[in-house]
Length: 152
Image (cartoon, rainbow, N blue to C red):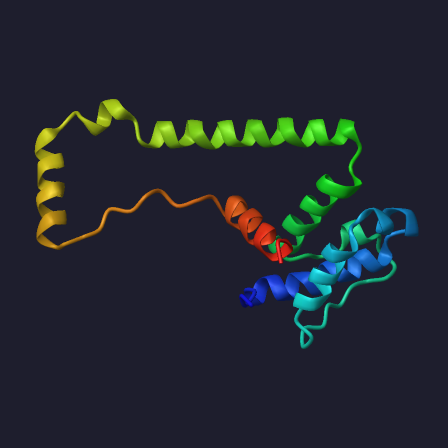
């Protein structure tokens, strides 16, 4: 069985605390295998402290916890209208990220000075540097990790 990252194990403790605060109707919408996966993979040594006087959405969560809760809400608890809103918001965010990438990697600037390109290529070859594909966004990595956990 694949070992879950320590941050996710801690996040599952926080997620479990939120699940325990849900009303029975909302709790029952989440499949038992998902709840069991969260509980089976949580860090038994991590203690999550929260203020019971505050509503759970005001608690201080790790980034991973927020991502897991977002996906649980979107997949199991959100209304059709909320799902449409989330999809639109995600599309806009992806578009914004792609626009920032385009501006950063402006093709006109890329081909302006061939001498610089040739020099970079020679340095890369001489140092045997690997050129790697662009890194996936953090949200995408989190989503992939969550999906791999729930496939078990």
